[in-house]
Every structure is written in structure tokens, then in C-alpha cells.
Image (cartoon, rainbow, N blue to C red; front, side, top):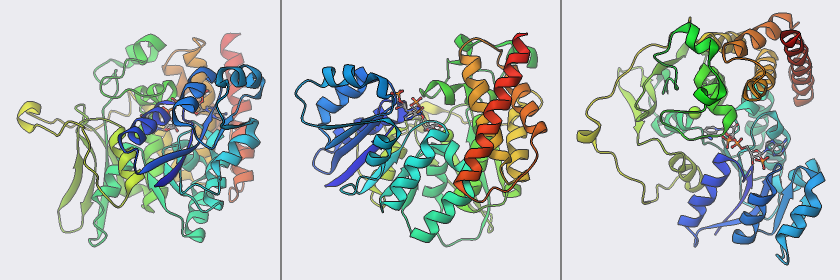
Length: 384
Ligand code: NDP
Ligand code: MG
């Protein structure tokens, strides 16, 4: 039995991880869950999977949560300390890192320090804190398995023998791939949350529409695969069948193909190095007919360029990008700004940033806090 804790079990990745656990009840045991504030779902999951311990980040909801759990014997923890205790549960073998945003940083570090393997979905953590986190992974010799579909595809396409020439990240293009710059700029949350191929949490769905997500994934790939930015590109592939590719020096290109379904990369990380049969639909090329590709247009999608530039600038610039983006992305979802203003806000914060040292998680958190304050100040100016 592999014992698993899921940080962010009430989110899109967390829920799909639990589905995979249900497929393999003899091999995967859920021993810990954490949620943010969705107490109804967290209580339902706890009663169903009966983990040893559950943590609720929003401690104000403890009494209601306890009432919902009734006589369920699972130990209940609350607040950040509770989440960290579950994230580093010593009886577990693997942590699924599926909290969204930089809130996942400390839980990831706790899991690593407790010696757990990490199935890693929480890209903002590597974007903001790639250098210290990957240093820790190397020092501890930890197992750190990508879950993000593009990075899982690259991992699956790395044969460990050839000289890698470049990485190609595929990108569905989101709901506005054919829209004009003006239509994209004015887009509302209702238009934006209709992703054509993937069903995901709200924040990442917005990031996919601006292509900020692809920019964040380029930075994530830089850290995960120790690859210079010049050797990482993105290509629009609207069918979302090829999930990313590795170009080798001898001219061969290896890629991973499947219908878009996050349960596949989640399962791959949970069982690595084994590939287990499941009931997901196998690809039917005759049904697919053709696959298409084109270069992303950085004029209509300037967030992609902005993220790449922040990655190449290094230091805390990616942390500032990601922190500011979290704030303006949430403001967009709350109806305070339009989709195009996400770029305006993040670019304004980045241009005001004075580069400082960025070697420790504490320095990253400081830069992230600064970026959030700047982004809030920028938002206030927009509403004036
Ligand atoms: P969701 O928004 O659906 O879920 C986020 C999870 O994190 C929820 O369980 C939420 O709890 C919890 N959470 C949020 N804030 C906090 C906090 N401050 N403290 C503790 N827990 C918190 O996100 P997704 O599942 O879509 O994404 C998770 C991560 O995986 C992101 O980094 C995303 O970029 C990445 N990813 C997601 C993909 C997808 O298909 N969804 C694909 C590839 C990567 P609650 O809801 O209870 O408040
Ligand atoms: Mg992805």
C-alpha cells in the first residue's frame, strides 16, 4: 500500500487524485487530506476515505466542519500549522502538492523535509521559488514527480540517454485563440472560464486564457529539467492531444500523446516508475483525423512574453510576476478589471520592482508580499 497525503484535496487536481485512488483501492491509501475553506466537500471526502488526519486551513470554519464530520474518527487539525502537519505526515510515502498559488510553498517544503516523495502540481511554487526548492530536492535526493500535463509529458519523453536539444511545450491556446486583441482585452470571466479542452480550477483557467499559464510553465520547465530558457519553446496545439515534446540532438523528437485528462499524469506520478492499466479511453487516430500547430502570437498574448522575460531576468522577478498575477487574476474573477488588464497590472508591478537577493524561501516570500501590495495599489488606481 502506498500511503498518500493530498494537499488541496478539495481542488480540481485534489478531486481527480481521489478518483485515481478509488481506481486502485488495494494499492493507494489516503492517509491525509487538506482543504482551504470548502468544508462541505472536505467533510464528504473525509467520511469517504477515512484518512488518519485532515487539516482545514480556514480555522474560522472549524466548528461547522466538526459538526459536518459527526462521529468520523479522523483527527482534525486547523490553520497553517495543521496543513503543514499533514503535508509532512511521517507515516505517509507521498504528498500530492495540489494547493494553488504560493500558499503551497511551505507544505511542499514540509513534505520534502519529512522525506516524502512529491507528486507536484503546484506550479506557482516552482515559478517563484524554483532555485531554493530544487536545491532542497537535490540535497535531499528527493523523488519529485511532475503532475502538470506538459511537464509529465516531457518527463515521460526523457529517455535518459540522448542529448536533449530543446523542450517544446504544447498549449491549447485557450478560449480566445482566434479572437482579436480587442476582444481578448475586453473579455469577462464568463467568456474566460469556458476552456475548450481542459476542466480546471478558476485561477489556472484564467491563466490559460491569457497564456500566462504557458509562461509560468516555461519557468517551471526551466527548473524541473535544468534547461536554459533559449531551449524551451511553446507551440499552440488546439486539440490538446500531444502534451509536450523533447527534441533530441540527433533529430528525433519524443512526445506523449493522450486525450486531455489530468487523471493520467496524476496516476503516472502516483505509480512511477510503473504504468498501470486504467479505464481511460485509448487514442483513436482515425477519429482525431488531424493535429494542428502554430506559433503563439505574443502581440495578442503579451503575458507569455512577460513571463518568459521575468524568468530570464531571474532572481525574484518570477516571484513578483506570479504574486502580482495571483492578485490581478483574482480581481479579474471578481469583476474588478478586464482580462487584458491582467497584463497591464503585472507589467506595472514588474517594472517597479528593484531586483534584490533571492536565494531563500524567506526572500521569495518577501518579494511575493511586496508584489501583492503593489498589485493591490495598482488595482485601487484603476477603480479611482
Ligand atoms: P483549485 O483552485 O481547484 O484548488 C486549489 C486547492 O488549494 C483547493 O483545495 C483549495 O481549498 C486549496 N487552497 C487554496 N488556498 C489555500 C490556502 N491558502 N491554504 C491551504 N489550502 C488552500 O486549483 P487546481 O486544482 O486547479 O490547481 C492546483 C494547482 O495545480 C495550481 O498550482 C495549478 O496551477 C496546478 N495545476 C492544475 C491543473 C488542473 O488541471 N487543474 C493542471 C496543472 C497544474 P478550498 O477549495 O477548500 O478553499
Ligand atoms: Mg499544464
